[in-house]
Length: 234
Image 1 (tube, rainbow, N blue to C red):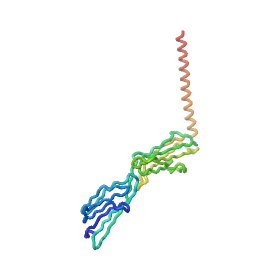
Image 2: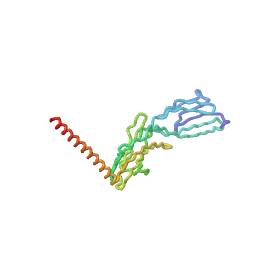
Image 3: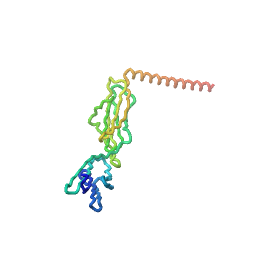
Image 4: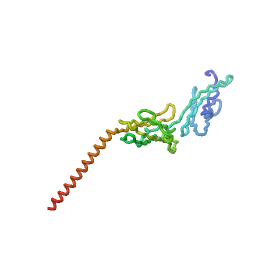
């Protein structure tokens, strides 16, 4: 098309025309605002045309097409399309709430993972010791009310039943995934210690000795105070 006389250059968002350049018209540039998008301006040089748009403040995916046509007698048309997704990235990693430092075998715990505000809102997955956790139907993702600009936080709970034979520790990871291409992943990790029956018995025994020592110290202190009182009354 290099040897053909230019007729027009047009920009489209999906099926809607938003920009037109026709060098034979006055003015040569026309802008078309459509619902949900503001066309802020455009400019054409000898071999290129640029258009500036303000996308809507919500998660969107749209096709932008540039169409170039020539004058007769050939009236050739060339068109190219690219897709663009508008997102707002989360500023912080997700947060795990409700994780105890110590659990007993057979105990059940309820965890909550909350992601930062983003657009679109993040999907959430749970992993226990690097394996995807199986969740129940009621443990689906929940969303906050939309904030200015359409941003939302998301959260998801997980009920963990600690096996009766478990010992050592559980590594729990919450993964917040922004569903775009390519996906944006942020995570949070917590480690929960699981005491075996032997370790738990030692732990309780140590605590009992400590409490008994404190009680003995209290008795000695009271006895000493009584002795001092007797001494002062002499």
